[in-house]
Image (cartoon, rainbow over all chains, first blue to last red; front, side, top):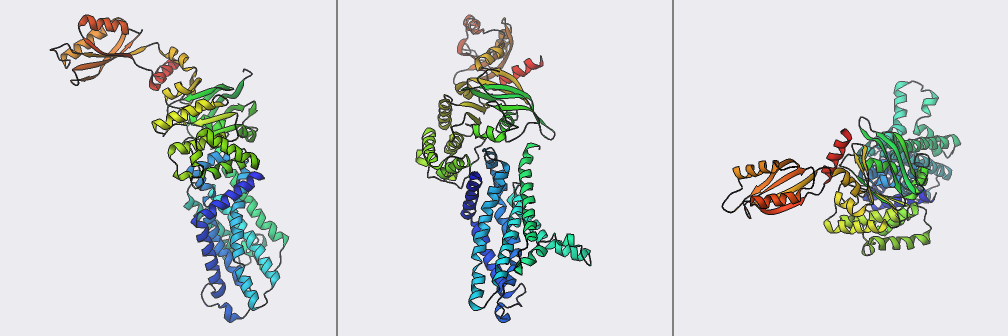
Length: 243
Length: 327
């Protein structure tokens, strides 16, 4: 456990040592802020709507996260592969699972800091109205879970290559796919998509959270996606043995 | 297997997609020994080391450290090893002290011990003035010391150093070699190199790997004894006054050399008019005929400029060892 925390601390420090963290964090706050107040086509107007809701935030934030988080995770393993430091890391007396968990935990630290910064939106809304605090809390739990799933997917793609750009692009595609493409594809393919397939979509799973409902099934879903990505990452690290 | 065997490598085979990197490598390393893994590039030295450090798994064969099988308990084996990979990969963005602290924490050091141990190791490798430097700003030689420091931190039973002096300038090479020699007094060390002089200086024993196979295992003196069936001798003569060594004269000399007993072959390797007119010949003889050559030159009236046995280089050793293997 000690090693996992040490690694997480080192990754978090390295993230904040590089400009990526600040660029990603700033982009996240500015873009979600703009979307929140003005909508994606500029027609929505938070102030004109006169409604104390954070729904727009929860609608747009996952989009922005799908772009930003793979940029944060792209270096996690790819950089170590390129510089050769991975060889020293995996020959420390720790397991590959510990390495993956430490790196993921470090990235979750970044996510937590960034999400904490977005708390200015609910605070702002609360000063001028009475938002449904249950829905806000549920939405944030949902965002955190989606974020962890995105980070896990990004980490997975980072183990596949020593090229950070490739890790980023493939990670981005995976995140966008899970967030929305499943949804869109299903609508194209079926008049009434089977429930089992609908449930694959992050969007479907996320909806309840924004209504203030934290359903264990949704939680388990997001954690399962993360777990699969973590196991995939461990497997990918171990593939050096049979290549 | 003697009681003192710390590392045991038996029948290691490593098959990459299409290439066989190791083809049945076996050797033992005893406690407190410094073993040199010698071989040309691509011979399989690094692959052997990567398997020893559990970075890679062998296709077949076994590796054990202190009796523990690397395949079944890699984490335990890693805890006993300190490893310096080829070209010393380090986190360039980190400060030396922070990096060592990070490695120590990953190795489960208690906080209080770690600080003390870092100070010790930093003194051992001579990094005192650089602990506050960012690794990216260090010279190659000091980066190498940081690499050694991280390998030494947990006072491991075994040190595995992959080409520890490659890319260093001559002064740094001497320093690092001395350091390794010192470390050898209380660690078991395997180092790889393609530099014969280095291995002669540092190692107690050498294992020579060629195309994935062990072609020799023993002390360097033993190996040279085996290899020295032919003697390579360098002879330089000055042309007698008034005569030039160029053209006909040099060819005459060559045939007269070839006619000498026990000369197997001879060739003109170099001739020049400056600083004095001279010609240099390279001979292969079945015995050490330097004495005969001296008398031959005296009798013929040639002034001897140079007469020496050519040191065996790695090429020579490989040539004759692999010829042995084929014969």
